[in-house]
Length: 346
Image 1: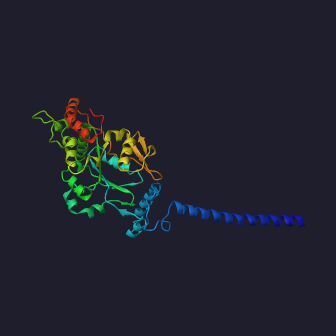
Image 2 (image 1 turned 120 degrees about the vertical axis):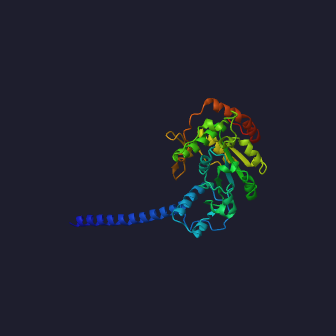
Image 3 (image 1 turned 60 degrees about the vertical axis):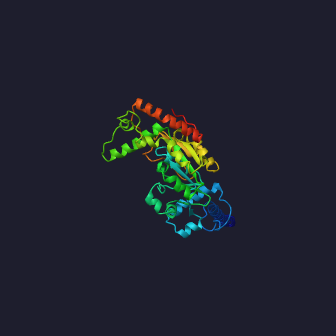
């Protein structure tokens, strides 16, 4: 009987001891987890004090971008944004064009870099007189919040072909970096036509065939009054820009290569913007259904460009296409000579 009582007492002590040790382990584990969470996602107390010096390490910028998005979802106040060192900055680089050259794809792909913040909408500050008259402060308000060591980039394709824009940008920042993405001129003209055609069809309006617009019926020559043709004469507009900016402030992106093999083009842009190499093949994956590359943001999400990108072009008469290619050839040669960039264009 005594033996059974002793055995029962030992079992009770064992259970009680296990509960105590379990509680201690739980508290230790919980404290350690909280410490780790504070290191991963500092919200208030762990942030660097305002005015502290030193560049934000690039490997932490991705985490800070996630925090930025979280603050916006919670309708953060100006004071909260200041606490996290978020500010609005004028662009240090602008994608100036060209229309239907791949400006949206380029901007979205560059935003994969943790040191790049993009303006989500085309601002049209420099090419729109009404917007420009509102002043630089208005322009700054249109920029996204960013950390001080990030680069803000905006894109408005109309900048490239609008006469007043180069001087206006120069007055704002004479050392700004300018990105120009181009495609084979005939392909770009067809893409331009296709976008306008789609807009007309949505409104149940008729529109001339491409061949009827690009050829002057009186002379049977290429119709340079047609905007889609004029925009593809890249050298005409670039020469005007060079009156204000040296060629060293321009980087030419091959829009055709950006479609088929984007990473090498993005690496060149990283170098031009003096950014460390951060965009990798991991960030880009080919979507067979969409027919072009989509984006993978680390630790966050994946996205493809809007369905309007990659429209199917209408068939164009081969002789008309060849006529256009012959027309653009001398302009292309001059563009290559000025920029030093070669292309696989006919």
